[in-house]
Amino acid sequence: MGTERDSAFRPSKKSFLQMSHREDRATVQWRRLDLPGHEVAQLSREADGWRLSGVAALTESGRPCRLEYDITSDAKWHTERCLVHGYVGPIGIKLDLVRSPSSAWTVNGTPVGSLDGCEDVDLGFSPATNLLPIRRLRLEVGATASVRAAWVRFPEMTTELLEQVYTRVAADRYLYESAGGTFKRELIVDATGFVVEYPGVWVAEASAGTATFDEAGLPLRWRPIHLQ
View: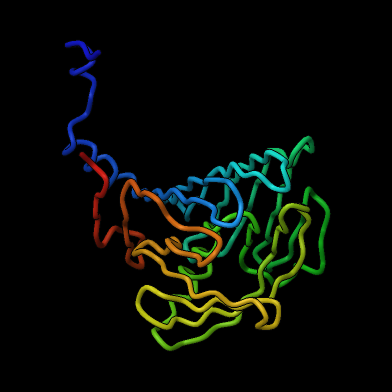
């Protein structure tokens, strides 16, 4: 039950939107379709780039899994660092992937030459990281680009190179291909670049808001949703 003191500290809808706009944040929640599970992720503008963070709770082969991640990128959306921690069943997970300005990679401090040249990290358990090449490439409709990603395989939680191709087929749709074209999905994205429908794997259930940004990282549009 609310009190007078509670009311004094509860922000109005207007002040909430102003705060969110100022902080340049967009949040989304997904439901996993091929496994039991959910995930929440948030994109935020940092002083010198971007931060993509989230947490996934999944069940894989009867094993409870919880994986939290924190990814930082530069202003042009090149991955700089990705931290992943949590557990897959009874096994604790701690990964620290770091990309140098020359696109050399280390995993938990050890150089991994097979990842050199990759500009993006791709988390195999999450739809969040598709946003990174989508925002970095800024493809026109009809354009295609190849991507080399440092892929964190799930549930093994090992790292390897994954060659990918993105083709923008409409303003809100990308054809995603990997494994030499044997894996294909048409992804539907929102104005921020978050995937909202990944056929057969993930679907977005809710969002706290959606923001798009210009070259300087300033919001072009803020569209609040699901506020009562």
